[in-house]
Structures are given as C-alpha cells and as structure tokens.
Amino acid sequence: MEDDNSDLDPELESIYADMDIMKERFGKLLLGEDMSGGGKGVSSALALSNAITNLAASVFGEISRLEPMPPDSKARWRKEIDWLLSVSDHIVEFVPSKQNTNGVTMEIMVTRQRSDVHLNIPALKKLDAMLMECLDNFKDQTEFTYASKDDVSKSKKKREDDKWWLPTPKVPPNGLSDITRKWLLFQKDSVNQVLKAAMAMNSHILTEMEIPESYIEALPKNGRASLGDSIYKNITVDHFDPDNFLSAMDLSSELKILDLKNRIEASIVIWRRKMTNKDGKSGWGSSVSIEKREQFEDRAETILLILKHRYPGIPQSALDISKIENSRDIGHAILESYSRILESLAHKVMSRIEDVMHADNLVHNPSADPKRNPLIYSASTASGKFPNAKEELEKINFSNAPTSMTLSDFIGWTLEHEKESKDKLSNGNESQPLTKQSSAANSKKLTYLDRLETLGGRSPSTHK
Image 1 (cartoon, helix red, strand yellow):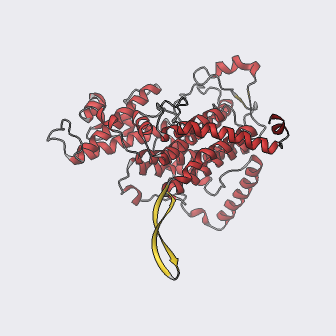
Image 2: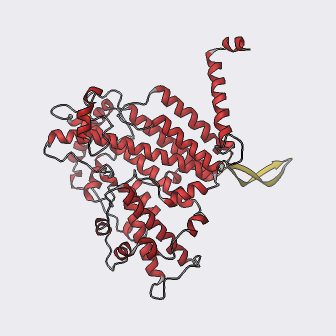
Image 3: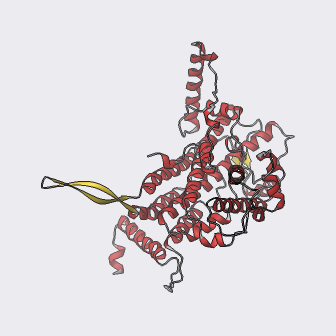
C-alpha cells in the first residue's frame, strides 16, 4: 500500500494530505475540542470560534513589517479559512416559495442560507482580501527598510517604551519623498476603512448575541455600585462632556482601560433591565426617572464608543467574553470571530504604517518626543472623537481614490487627480465649498452601534 501511495501524482498527494488535515480539524470541532471523547468539550459554536481565532494567530502572528505575506502562509490561510467558513453553508432558514406542479401553483417552504450569514460572510471576505492586497502593495517599495538583527541594541533603545521586539523602520537621511509620504497616507486611510468596517461588524454581532444569565446574576444591584462613586458622579453631572470625563479617568494601562469598560458595560445592562422592569434587584428610588436613566445610558454608550476607537487593541470586555463563551449560535460565532481577527489584523497593519510615518517625522523634527503611548491608536479618523472640519478635509482629498494601489499606481493616479483639480479650478469651481455640514445628522439620537457605524462607514451587513 505504501508503494502505491508513493506512485501518486503530487496533486493527488496534496489532496489526500488536505483530507487528513480536514478530518482532524472537523473531528476536533465535532468533539468540542475534547479529543479524548469524554464529553467534556465546549459547545460547537465556541469550538468553531476558537478554531478561527487560533488559525489567524498561527498564520499571521505578530505582523512586524510592511511586506507581502509568504505565499505558503497566504495559501494556507485561504484554504483553511474556507474550510471553517464552509460550515455557514448549512446555517439555513425556511422561506416561502411558489412551486408549479402540473399547472397547479402551490406555496411551499424551502431552505436558504440565513440572511445575516448570507450578507456578511461575503463582506468579511472582501475586507480580508483588501488587507492582503494592502500588504502586497508594499512589495516594490524601496524607500524605507528595517533595522537588521545586528542592530538589535539600537532598535531596543528606540522602542524601549513601545514594543521593543519589533524591528525599527529606517528612512532616508532626508526622510521619505513627498510622493511616498502621500502614498503611505493613502494606504493608511484604506486600512483605516477596513478597520472601522470590521469594528462596526463585530459590535453589531456582539449586540445581537444574548446576554448570558450567568453574567446577569453576577451584576451589582444598581448602576452606581457597578461604576463606583467617583465614576458615577462624573457621568451623572448636569453638564456632561466626554473629553472632561476621560481626562478625569486613569487610562495609563490596558488593565485600567479594560476595568473602566467593564464597569460601564455592566451599568448599561443594569439600567436597561431596570427600564424594562426585568431586574428584580433593589430599585433606584423615586428620584431617578426613566428619562434620567436613558440619559445616563446614552452618556455611557458615548464613552464606550470613544474607548473603542481610541484603544482598539484593548482585550475583550467581560461582557463580550461571556457572550462568546455561552453562545450556541454557530452563525454568530463565525461572524464574530472572523470580524474580530480582521479587526486585529487591520490594527496591526495600521500600527506598522504609523511606525514608518513616525520614523519619517523624527527625521524632519528631531526634537520631537519619540516616546509614544502604544495603547493609543492615533489615526485622525479614529481618534476617539467625532470628525472635525480638518479631518473631513483630509477625507475629501482622497475621496475619489480607488481602494488600493501600489506606489507606481499611486504616482500615476496622483498626477491625474491633480490635473483634474486644476481643470475644475479653471472652470470656476473654486468658489464651491469643500465641506457641507448636515443639520439633520445631529438631530437624530444615535445608539452606540449607530455612532460606531457613522464613524466607520456603514456596516458591511447593510450591503449585498
């Protein structure tokens, strides 16, 4: 038998090898990660979520450089993520349909892929492809390099307050050329759009997941007990300002940021349950009206929104972890884990781009403080605040750009874009305003998810 296998074509050998890997992967999923068969495994939804997460960690790891993925790693990712996503083909729902039999039309129920999975899986695959294409775009760039292994001590010194194990970008003595700098800004904006779309998707899916009873049972009796006296007073003042609130908080470490997020999310759950009379615990007292609770909840959601955009690399909150671990919906598990790993990947690519831009800024301004807070995501369009006029102008400068392009492509597009701008000015269009504020945009009360999608563009779930 061994002699027969040795005579197989390489293509057949590869197919048989893939089949063995698939048996192992799906066997582990069916047993809930308990390969002993003792029945102590996790749910199928959690096993699938863990499989997608672990696959991404093994393929991508820590992206340390702006360069294309190795062909073997990219091929493995495409193949194995398709295996795991194939489970979604069997997540179906019944829909009415008409059937004509011998001239008689009857209405019957047929199955089709569940609508949320049908809409969102293709959208996530598109975001996935955009990130891979962005990394591929750095194939031919030669202006910046990275510190060699022989220069580790120097690299550590420069990154002593950041991730010192990552290689330090090296730019020319005079800095990057103007066209390369603009191209990097374009790539950054493209990845930023992917990041915000993945964030909106992930938040939407987590919102759809049910809150586990185990989480509810562990909640304090009221919102004040969850927040603590100091945070409670800052969030219930008469004139509330999110920036003033955050400036009063200690956000110097991941642990403290995560603790604040956990406290705020718990208080929101408590307030919502009390407003819908689902909480039998101790009441608030007659002095607090439903309108006040809604106001406090809206403020808390605003703080969550800012934290989400200002610190996208923060670990998941206690509520998110509880939802993921207790979910039995396989469709939600696939969408949540896939969007989460894309969000993480986009954030890493964004950070590497910012490292190069930071190195370039130091060349032009040597007196600038090289120490940066590694927790803060500094992209202007996701700085934790609602867009201002300057940020809107920066968006308009690249509003007609394609989604991705190499440096050589960008040079040609920039020249063409500048020519079009000059033509418009020569036709008398210079008097037209660059931005136009919408008064209706601020008149509608937005939820946390609505605001997230407003900053990040519409969620992929809204597109077919």
